[in-house]
Length: 323
Image (cartoon, rainbow, N blue to C red):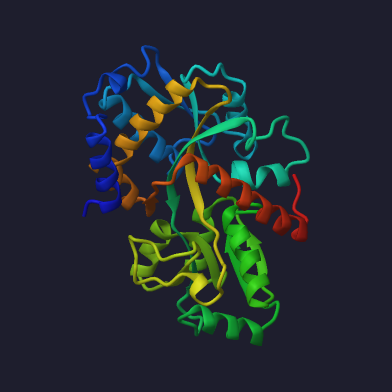
């Protein structure tokens, strides 16, 4: 069903004179526009970037092309955009950890992603969940807390690796719930979920879309989403915050531009991207990949990035993870 929030925003744009065929959108760039994805092809970030590139091109904004620049947990591709000419033809599509984790994880990066890039738009949030193997005798977060307290430092919790949002969920859960778990890091979310589904690790943090097939087969049981509120896609799944008030860790995907990009160019890009993000095609891609579309103003987005960075700095300092 069409997201009403996006429909309302699109209607407001049209009433303001920004119709789909506007000259501004049609002339965003006469040159190819590179969307740099700082990770390999095939993941959620790459999928959203490619869908956005197709829709922005279809809207008449120019020729948008995705370019994958993986390495150093996203730092290599991000640096490409930091150093780019601020003409609007080189942009970044990246997840939260590049901005809110990497500066605290790496001893040196050579740049400051929060202050050396301009937020264009928060595009989406990946729905992360805490799930357990079907053999674990718990069906809710309060039951998991009670069970974990009865078995201190005995239960493993699988994540996508050190310093990932999944890892931060595990650490914040232990801190706020007052439990002791064994962190089991993997090289990615898929192998972590596969091992949890096989019964090798009793608890796992992962993307809902990847976990769902194992839920359907009965091997995993989802307890809660990790963002502050329930996901519009799965309103029957409670949020951890309903049991632990203030719990809020989400994994978002955003678009960023180099500093000092002309304001008129930046405004044109935001108009084009907002229209594109409201399309049926992009909404379908997001739902398929377990991703919630977001309509957050750039000013609010920047403030939240800084706030998340401050929280993650304290968490990472407490667990002493460095690269």
